[in-house]
Length: 310
Image (cartoon, rainbow, N blue to C red; front, top):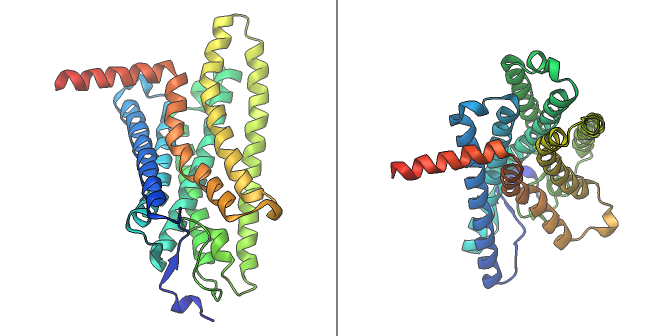
């Protein structure tokens, strides 16, 4: 029996059993992370440099890209290192840092997606009040509130999780440090506090989900009342990327945390964790750039200028 004071490192779950498969996973993770870095980096550069993109929608998109970059940089580098060097160790402090930043960026992404939904709702359902409700100061306050609430949520979860005594070894059934696998190592009934925090976070997540669904019901009702087909198409083109990103994010996270224990297995848990921690940051820029003509034009202009300078 050991406790948390004697644990110096944790053992992460290997992505594969053989060196060849580990090398394959390293290459896949490298490709996905490079795609995420390139896509989100281009969005950040385009929004920052394009004056015509200095609008609430693109301001929140820039913040979402930052959250995606942070999320994938939290989990993937260590997994790539372990796959390449055939190891599974992560230090105690490194694990705590990974838990904090993963919860921080995951919470920030949910908050930002909810704020972006409000932006679309005001833009389509209350266009005459758009400038008043979503001025530059209001947008800055909403973004700051999203990041601040994510920071507090991550701080509470991390502090509480790593204050629990651990007496069931140090092997985590996950390829990165996450709260539920660490709770399984706890030998204290005080982990009920963390379960309570998780329940509170899930309740807030459910509240965001209900708000998003309600907003989109109102949005689609308003869009269908637009008389011109061109107007409806333009309204849908600004909403569908956000709706696709929200669906991808919420469906994978909800399945990971709310699936019944009867269908749980190491291989399924590993696959689902990759879906909600690695795939969305790489797909989000592609979803937004494919459906948003303004963003595509800005990216094309930026790449043309960079090629001309060369």
